[in-house]
Amino acid sequence: MYKMAFVFPGQGSQYVGMGQAWHSAYPIARELFEMANDALGFDLKKICFEGSTQILRKTEIAQPAILTVSLIAYRIILQEVEIVQPVLAGHSLGEISALCAAEAISFADAVKLVHARGKYMQEAVPEGRGSMYAVVGLSSEQVKEICREISLNIGTVVPSNYNASKQTVISGVKGAVEEAAISMKHAGAQVIPLKVSAPFHSPLMEPALAPFREFLDGLTLHPLQHPVVSNVTGDFYKSEQDIIPLLTDQLMNPVLWTACMNRMATLPVQAFIETGPRETLGPLLKERFPEAKVYATDSIHSTMQDCLDNLRGDSERNHLRSTGNLMDKCLSIAVCTKNHNSNADEYQRNVIGPYKMIQRMKEEITVSGKEPTLEQTEKVLHLLGTILKGKKLPVDELKLRLEQAINETGMPGLFQGLLMF
Image (cartoon, rainbow, N blue to C red; front, side):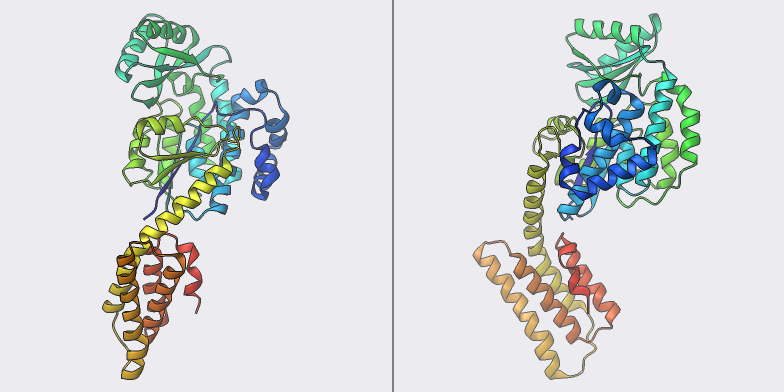
């Protein structure tokens, strides 16, 4: 089946003006901004559109802002393109965006959760006491060894994000992080200070654990409707029961993003889409999977329409590939389904005749070398419906068999009307 992987960015992807173009163009964006404002009790939309960079950089503001804009992008895509079996993952706070997209946490609860999370994380370490740097060019083992040495002699600094084979983020006490950055530069790395206000995913986050866990305990959690990958394990959540312990552990544990990417790719995935205000994860995906299709909504560069156009094209091509299998599936269902019609004339007209028509269509398409069209796909499904009715199947069984064939198209939403009889 056709799988699309959605990835949701973490803190640092925010900027003043994010989501404004979508707010103007899509009613769903206006609806979610209003829901976020109501949930938070302040005007998040105004901060996103008109606030200062300094305000938007505050953890307790940045996190609900990014989640809101990310969910807007996700909902726009679902509204505009037929997506089958989405797979979800997020980087740090993006994991909560992914859980919201999977319907395990309501949007209003998710906005309040990340606002509280940001507040607890910021309060854990006063602003200016901690910092984070991206380290490019060293292996994770080299980064771990330098962090270990600096931690023994100066203060806490640890790897906090394993983003790529040679890109790791470090986090900890400001002086120790800066000293580690100097050592890593000497070892040949490029080091980049991150625009965050606290040392996330480090032992310094321990004071945030208890209040965050208490907040999580007060939420109503729901079964996951789509698979979500955990930053802590690099594997899929087994159920909504994993949410509280894994999100709590995530505060102090490193983000295993490389493992998350690898796990998504095992499904397999036909394309990755980064749904967020600014592309940050796309380059990591392109580096890890150079042959994969990677799209971003990235509202800075107004790429939402390009993303939608690409996804529609992919969806159509996937449909065409699936339709060849569909014909075999329809013929198989027609043969294997028990007949309940003893009238020979009706059986010849409504079963044998349509079966031969499907066979001829398959032969013609094979000879032509062309892909089946949507019209041909619909005709095949209609013919199967005629065969099943001709065999006088009970309605429930008829619907089940036809639904099996419709699912084979990879675009079941286009053909659900065939089940209305």
